[in-house]
Image (cartoon, rainbow, N blue to C red; front, side, top):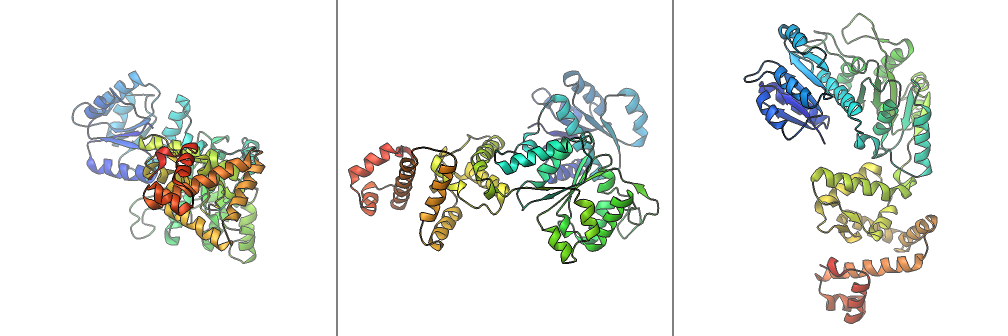
Length: 466
């Protein structure tokens, strides 16, 4: 994946940008001089450049001119002191995506970089697969209904409330709603209201004036201002403190807000998409969430299905996540055996799609063979399966679930397939227990050594022992 290139001879500025981009999961490369970046340009290309102008060696403007001779569509953000602005404009008029005067607000800088990334992807025709595919991938009827809703809302500015458990992909759906809306060329700003301390959340949302409180050394733009013209995604809205619910209601009602310590109203032109894992209807009844705010947010409601409600999508998602992990790590892609896929499709996945993604990443890193079997799964998965079977009386409940799934998919020869899976699992477990010693494994299974050898050959287990 192409990255953001940071070019500045000031180590402290590079450090601040690096930490901020890493926190936002944006890939980057840093250069202490434009000369170093120019050398890297001979064998690599950035997605976006953020560069100082005055540096030892060639200037930032010289680098940008060289960059645009080879890659005219790459957006460039110029960091400059105000004294450099006029010369920058005259020397590079129309070539810069944006100017970032020093000293700058880091949140504003990251916002500019995100906007530049979006422009770069649109111009190059690149699709951001991680945003578009992961959770927004599925053939299950429940997911098709989500797709249809996104399509119906594509020309709407309506407020949307997304309900779904943790890990179901609420932010990805919010990003898709933004990307397919009339505001797609404006910022998408996300904030998790449950992850920010109550005393900081107001400033995060609405910004603050210089001197508004101890430590407020400069005016700061909040998320509403950063999202101007675009979309503001309020995640875990159900956990928002009561006093901030009141302030948010006021913004939604009259379209204006005040920075902390401010006296001038600021017009808010943003689309609100909110999300929660909680039942807001119940929280309203319990007086934990304002009813009037609930009705303001509940214009369009989307419910994201749990992964266990769309089990038929598990193979599709698993294949994608294994491919994604292999690409990120630069290794060979793993493949789940039919037995392992059937096993996973029968699990409950309390962490939903995020849990499946984490599992696929673990398998990519930890599994030695290319083909992943049930025995290769993390111990806690196998242990939980065993405990679940014991709790239900025996393992036949898991077998019944697998048979039911196969019947729903319209498979044929189900008995032969499940019998083969049964034998494969028993043999692999016995061989793993004995360290690959076949005679001992055959004795424990109660079959002859020749029978065990024949079944190993028939089931294709020759390369999976020990």
